[in-house]
Image 1: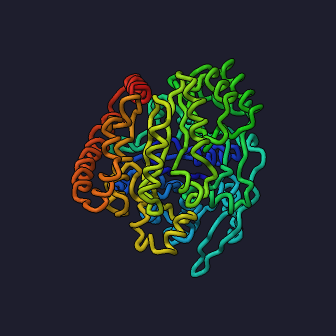
Image 2 (image 1 turned 120 degrees about the vertical axis):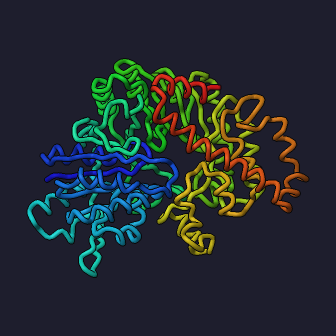
Image 3 (image 1 turned 180 degrees about the horizontal axis):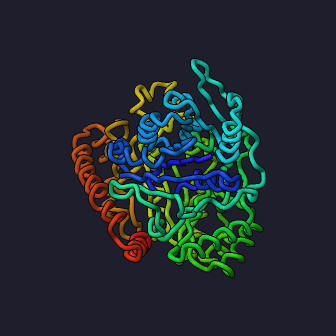
Length: 507
């Protein structure tokens, strides 16, 4: 069959549909992949001229799959409705479809819930033989007025059985400056987002992993073997000589057993020997693991702090203490060649001023230098925290979920949620490079003044100054996202981007 898979992600790094494509190709199906990255203004839809080009590319398809995150779901639904004129089966997939099938089935007759490789293959085999598809596992299927809600099939225990994700250039397309053109090596930007495993044992209430753990009864955590990962990376590096970095995007790479990290690092140092990045969490960081990663060429690690200790434990159900964070920071600070980024979440209606102040004080304790990434909370449709917020009235209208705001939309989140505005804005202004003298945009000496009890009480009572400053921040963010970032993404050569990243994360 002729299959077209469409990604609405903001970057062409969607490993999910690439993995589906490679398995379908292994079974002799013809697959076309179309990446539709767009401005990070999630409410902005595709122009009609783009949809017309898309329709032309999809005309010979026997089936179309459209993948989306919650943040890009509006554009995915726009694509789905426009392509219905093809009169072929259209599948709504991706993590948004997995956690929000009730919403997605209103736009499409086929919704894929859970991992898609074997699910897609099973559906296509039924369609090819013209058999009844109403019981295909992993799918919600609408037939007239009946919705069949089929359970997921068992997960593949051995991920190494899957072929490498599809990074062929043939029949791959990408949206660039209003035109859908053939995909070229330069569109990778010199790096590849790379998943070496699936699942996360923590299942925080704001995260899709919580839903996946329930869907698969806690069995979703699996890893590719170190040999599989290295062979995959070597394959990509040979195919794309311009690749300068591999960005390992497992939810927490440091969760792997020491023996696996040791084997991976040994093979990586011997056979690959270019820089790589990864994600980790405070509870699983050890001196031994970090030393191995540093020696193998790891130059960047992202650590999830998320909230204050109380919010982590009581709201996010994340079993993590402030001492876990301090301990991991002390270890990482011994390795100056590794640039560290700490992720935190704020603008949460369930946190208090004291929670935010505790989080700010924890950040102030961490040894510099590092980069602080401040993200504002989004209630993803279908997540446990979303259900709680709906039940207690925190989300009265769908816009209250902030699902179509980006995490960096600082003042938009503050205006929407209307709680703890002053300290939330202060924390947002701390985003950026942290040194001995400053945290983001704020000098440390000024931060002491801004955080006095008297000043916090004043700004909690009189909110106009906070809103004036927030409005100015919003203007700055607008110019950054709509002028500076497009120039950076679309016009700067790769070597300038690499130089800029080094300055940005290591200043």
